[in-house]
Length: 488
Image (tube, rainbow, N blue to C red; front, side, top):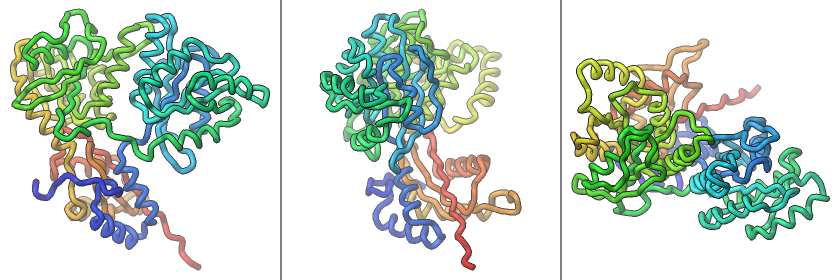
């Protein structure tokens, strides 16, 4: 099987080589697909995640209103008081034919750990995870100390910034906007997010600085250590595991949950290789700003996950699998990272708890059956060495690519043996497909009609059975052939 699977190089057509791409496009046009649509589907899937635009600024300057204006619909919660948006919320947007993600970072309480800390916690992560930033300032109020604090963060991050001077409702406000040149971020773009004035011009500027596809922030250093994020809810044993793998006390371990506040990057020798482990603060189920440091720790954990290649999710087997555990696993899958599940404190299990744990895993973790599982004890070091082959397996699956010819032969067998159910007198068929990207593997299927979610899950399951893909999420997108108009 391995000789049929390889890693593809980037050729500007997802990860298809030039000859494979030409052959594929010929097949697509023969089947009645528009060449431009096919090219768009490949480019979309090949690039992986869409570029990310973060909207940052101090409370009550109109960030959520601006996000709604960019989206062209009312999605973000808007209320005339600071701090309504507590968690970062991501939306998909489009402008001038370009698609991108918008992150509404929301407000933060100014009295939690002081103004500088609260600005840093919210804005720092948003800026780090974004490809470009819209910095929103209330032109009517002018630049405040909080705005200056954000400017320092922006300069340090070095990301492209578009300065939005909001609440400029007419020509009289233009002078207020011009005063914001003093921030040193270039031209302020006068906008009224509420009425839509100037937002089009501002978005044109955004497209100039937003990349067509995001730069990958992981695994770019050839031969460099692979990045592993240890994530899990508080007090699950992440720091103990890091110390055990390192062979020394590098991180403070305390029975009080949430001792670790910042990710600590550690180069660790394990299984004859050097790995870069990121130990992170635990993620709580509901993060409120009143929890102060825990809120900031959650943001930093998400940032660590963004930079990692593989996530090792620790689960405390002495307790029932919780909503928190499921949420953390979902975060890793949605981030598109390779995944390993490490069941910690295994040495504490008795037969009864082991029986119920297996039932919980079957019931609650059925969606991630593909993730390698390791039963460990971070405290005693039991089976910690098994983490390395599990991580290597997950990374191998994450980077696997199936050649288009082999994939279509497989799809043909599937369609013949297990056709899509007939719905409304019609039976959609998968015509052909290709793998447009890796890390994680991303497939585009071209079909004669809409494929139901259950059939898509069936295809994903069969892909895993045939080609492995252990330890990695799979992204499946489907393009449906448009009906040709019959000539009279």
